[in-house]
Image (tube, rainbow, N blue to C red; front, side, top):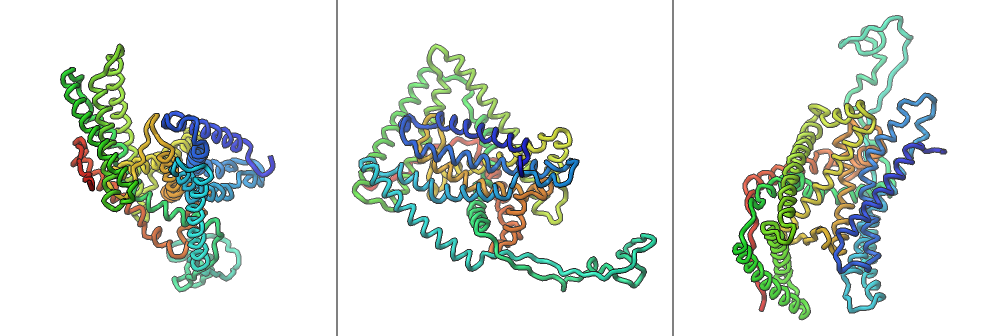
Length: 510
C-alpha cells in the first residue's frame, strides 16, 4: 500500500461515501418544492460544502487514529506507513476557503439573480461580483503575508559541558545534574531567562490562508457558538415547557385560525408594499429594517400555524397525530437534558483545562483516553461527537441571533421548505466555522490529540503567528465563548419560558 495505512484508508473511503449519501438525502428532503428539478449547480455546491465540513470535523478523530496506528507496531518504520495528515489538512482547508469566499458567493449571486435575465447575463453578473471579491481577498492576503506572514517561536539557548559517566546516580533538589557538588554539567537544566531568544521564520502561504480563515471563523464561532451552546439544549427544554397541554375545541380553533388569517393578510399587504418600494428604487435603511421585521413576523406566523395544527389535529388519524406530537415533545425534553449535560461539560472543560493555567485537570481528555482503553474506537467516537456538537451549537446560535439582530439575515432551515439561497448561506456558515471548531477542539483536547498534524498546524503555527498570536495567548475567543454562554443561560432562565409574541414593528413608507 506504499505510504498509507490500509485499514485507515478503507475506513476513510467508506466514511466519505456515507457522508456524501447522507448529504444528498438532506438536500432532497430539505429543499423547497420550487427548486425541484432545477438549480443543479447550487445543489452540487451544497452537497460538496456539507461533505467537506463533515469530513473536516471527522479528520481530527482520524488524525488521532492515524497517530495511534503505529503505537503497537512490531517493526521499525511503521510510523512512516500512515496517512499524510498534514497535506490532507491543508488540502481540505484550502478547499474550504475557496468554497466559502468564491464558489458559494457565486452560486448565491447566480441563484438570486433576476429571473427575467438570460442565463448568460446571470453568470456574468455573478462572475463580476466574485472577481471583485477575489481581487480584494488576493490583495489583502498578499499584503498581509508579505508584511506579517511570519511565526515567532520563543526558544531557549541551552548548552552543557561533558563529564565522565558516574558510577552511581544520586539526584536531589540540591543536586539536579550529573557530577559532584559545585559541578554544573547540566547547565541546560539550570538555564536562566536571559537565554531565551525569538526564532523567526516565514510560514507557508497555505498555512497562512488557513490561519486567517480560522481567525474570521473564530470570531463567528465565539459569538454563535457561545450563544448556541446554551440555547441549543435550553431551546429544546423550554419548547417542551411551552408545549400544547391538550387538544382545543373546534370553536377555539376557528377563533385562532381567523386571527391568523387576519395576520396573514396584513403581512401580505406589507410584503406587496415593500416589493413596490423595491421596484421604485427606494431601498434605504428603513426599507431593510421593515423587510427584516416582516421576515420575523412571517416566521412567527408559520410557527403559530404549526402550533395550531398540533393543538387541533384533523383527519381520520387525529388521535395518532396527537400521540406523535406528545412523543415528539418528550423526545425534545430528553434530547434537551442530554444536550444540557454536554453543554455544561464543554463549558466546565474550557474553564478547567484552558482558562486556568496550569490546568486543574485533563477532564474530558482523560475521559476519551479511558474510553479508548475500553474499546479502541469508543474514545474516538466520543471525541467526534463533542466536535460535532460544537458545530450544531454554532448553527443554533446563528438561528437565534438571526431572529433578533437586524444586521444578520434570516436563513432558516425547514424540512421540505428550504430555498437554495438559505441552503448556501448556512453551508457557508458551517464551512467557515468548521475550521475554528477544529482549531478549538485541537486546543481544548490537546492532551488527547497530542502529536497530531492538526495540533502542529492549529497549535504551534497558528498560536505563534505574528500579529494574531496574542488572541490565543490571552484566550480571547475562549473567554468570549464562556461569557456569551453564561449570558444566554441567564436570558433563557429569565425569558425562555415565555412565548414570543408578534411585534408588529414594521412601518411602511406609504
